[in-house]
Length: 453
Image 1: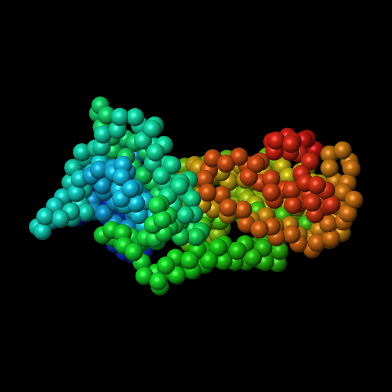
Image 2: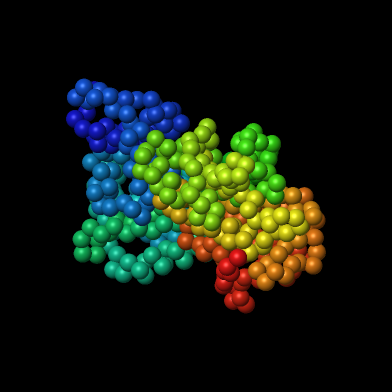
C-alpha cells in the first residue's frame, strides 16, 4: 500500500495506533514501519512528538487543543470507543441518577488509563439496534451558558469523587449558535483509586474497551496495588540514579562532593517514550531550555539515557553541574555549587537553584506535553560538618550533621502551580536543619522574596 503524502502516512498510523486494542504492539509497529512514497523512504521519526496512549490526548493533541476538524475526523474515520475514548450523545447531569452515571464514567476512565469523554457525538447502531461504539455523527449538545455549565460539572466532579479531583480538562468546542461538543480530558489516577461518593454511592469503577464496569474485590485490590507500585518505582529510580552518579558510573569526571539532586518523575509513565529525541525542534528547544544552574551555557550531548546539558570547570575539567532529560520524560538536575567550601552551605543559592530547576521543569513539560501528575525528589549529600550561611553573612547556629538529606516526594498534579509556593515546604525543612524557623525568603503571606547572593 502506498500513500500519496507524508501527512497521509502519519494520519493513517495515528489512527491505527490509537484504535489498536494492543497498544504496546501497535507502538512497536509504528516504530518499525516505513513506506515507499514516490521513491523516497519515509522515516516516520520526522513526524515529531506524536505520542500514543497518553492520557487526555487524541490525534497527538491534548484535549484542550482539539478543534472541530478533529471531532469530524472521528466520524469520518469511524473511530471506535476504547479504554481511552468514550462517546456520549447527550450531557445529562440534572438528576441524581444522571450525576451518578456521569461520575461513574469519569471514575472508570480515571481508574484505568485516563482518556477523553466526548459529549455530542452519536454512535452508529449495530444489527441488534444497540450502540456499536463507532462515531457516527456530530450532533452537539445545547449549552446556553458555557461558564455556568462548566462550573456545574467541575463542582460535581470535585465533590462527587473521593479523593477529590481538580485535574480534569473541560474543552467546549463550538459548532453553531448554542450547540457545542464538550471534550472532557481525564488523567490516569496515580494515587488512591477514585471512588464515586456522590449521595452515598461509594463505588469503584473501571473501564474496558466497550465501557465501564464494577470491578470485583481482586480488581479493586489491584487498583490500590498499582498506586503503591508506581510510587515505589519512582523512589527506586531516584535511588538508582544517585548511586550511579555518586559512584561516577554515569559521568567519570563528575565532582561528587556536596551533591545536590532534583529528580522529577512523571508518575505512571516510566518506560514510555514521551520525548522524541529524533525530532530536531525538540532538540532545539532543549538546547535553549534544559538549563544548568545560574544561566551557564552548558555543553549538549546525547547519551544512553536521553539528552544532557553539562558544564565542566575550566581549571580541572570536572563536571560540577548538569541537567539531564530521559526518554520517558524524567528529569535530573545536579550541582554542588551551593557548597562554599568548608564549613558553609550557601542557603540562598541553594534555594534559588531549587526554584529555578522547578521552573525549568514546568516549562519543559508544558512545551513537550509531558502530563502531570509527577513527583519531585530533592536529595542533598555531605552535610555532616556544614552550617548554613545566608546573604547577610550570618550563619546557622548548628551544624546540619547529616551525611544525606532525602526529602519526601512532592506531588505536582498540574503545570499551573507557583514554583516558589510549591517548593516552600521542602525549603523550610532545609533551613530548619540548620536550627532556623524556616526559609527567611518568604514573607508572612508566604510570598517568595528572592535575594541576590
